[in-house]
Length: 149
Image 1 (cartoon, rainbow, N blue to C red):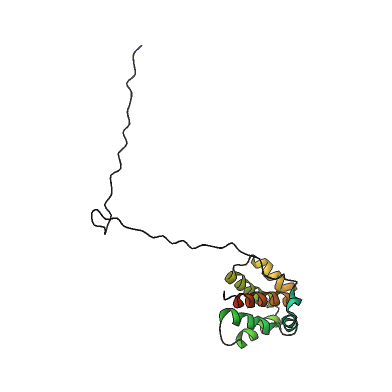
Image 2: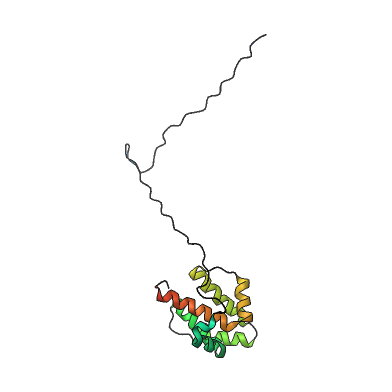
């Protein structure tokens, strides 16, 4: 019986690579910062807890365009709300109120990292406008009170 010759594989070794901008013998320090992403949270108040802020609930029943506009004004820290109020009023007269309202609700969810999706936003503004607007206002007011706006 004759012995088979064995093959040996040699891998190249690691050689230190030159670092651009570093003098020989010095080390570069790289600082990596990582943004901590908090998981989405639920709304602070239930959709049907609108009577917890009875005044806003009544106002949302009588003048939803005004509550929508003041919510947007509070969230964006802008001065006037007439344009948003007029836009919401005109949209509701054309049957497009839920489209505008759900966009505002999505902005609140996005800014304050609240769970939900565009479908639930649309349904809330389609079937229960005063409850949705009141819930959004309470969330915005709560965030402003805690200094998170």
